[in-house]
Amino acid sequence: MVQAYILIQTEVGKASTVAETICKIPGVLQAEDVTGPYDVIVRAQAETVDELGRMVVAKVQQVDGITRTLTCPVVHL
Image (cartoon, rainbow, N blue to C red; front, side, top):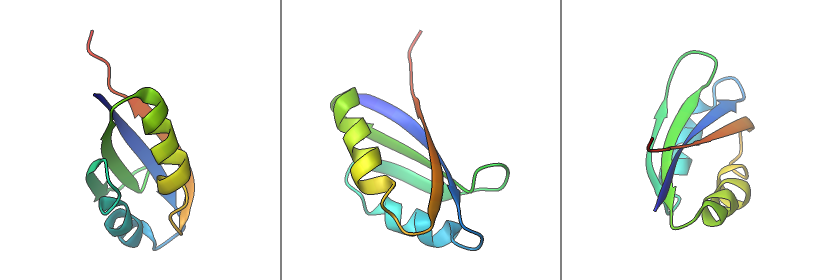
């Protein structure tokens, strides 16, 4: 299982709507609207890195109001 944090920038005033929508995507464990350089932080998981990438590109990035994403895979050192 691969997990990642997805840092999201949104259009002004769209953070809570984006977080609510993303929570419904299969594989998303948590989505929170936050303050700072990013507006929403998501924790997601998938079986493989490829599957995680497909989820981000095909589902997360398609949510209305998102302007940019940064995916940070979790590593165990």
